[in-house]
Amino acid sequence: MLALAFALLGCAQKTDVDALNARVATLEEKVAALEKGGGSRGAAAAADPAKEEAANAVMKDATESIKGNDFATAKTKLEQLKKDYPDTKAGKAADRMYAEVGLIGTDAHPIEAEKWFQGKADYSNSPVTLVVFWEAWCPHCKKEVPELAKREAELKKKGVQVVGVTRVTKSSTEETVKTFLKDNDVKFPMAKDKDGVTSEAFNVSGIPAAALVKNGKVIWRGHPGRLDDATLDKLISG
Image (cartoon, rainbow, N blue to C red):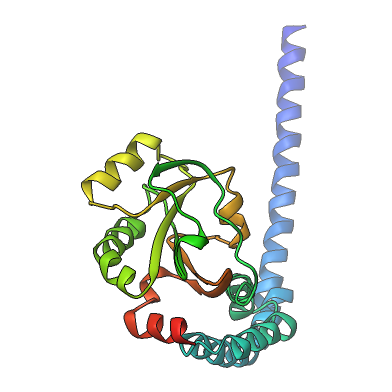
């Protein structure tokens, strides 16, 4: 009886091995066929370069328009990318840029705070408000927020108040936020976003991010590092 059991076990194992070998052989044949003919992905890749090049040209125009604060043209170019080149790298990148540019000219969402770490502010406190979105764990935020703190006095002279908004995510805690503000001499008002509502309203998908609000309207949206004095002066006076 025991001998029969071992014999049956041996047969089962051999059958399994044979079946596996057959499956491997089939897969190898399919791979070889794809490599030889290029397959659907290969054909798509062969057709992509011209499309990618055309999409990149449109993206370049959109980017230059944004740099020149010509947001109407930028929006048109990004819409073209989304419509004509949705499967290209530039087309996919256009979604995020369009979400930012699309805010310009719209009513600014109020700053909804669960609490204020320091100070308190809203758009009525100043003709222009620079809202900065950041997190204490973010390496780039750790550079940009202290830089804004150094520029705060200069910005106030231009009639611009700075307001920080943080959701306190990932490794951040309220204590790490407080420590960061103290260690970097950040004195402008700092809010803890209420359920992420403010960040979502400003289409924040990456940080640091910023929005410039004038007379209740969004007049600029992007990375705070791109908002140099020349750009800021042009936006405020425009």
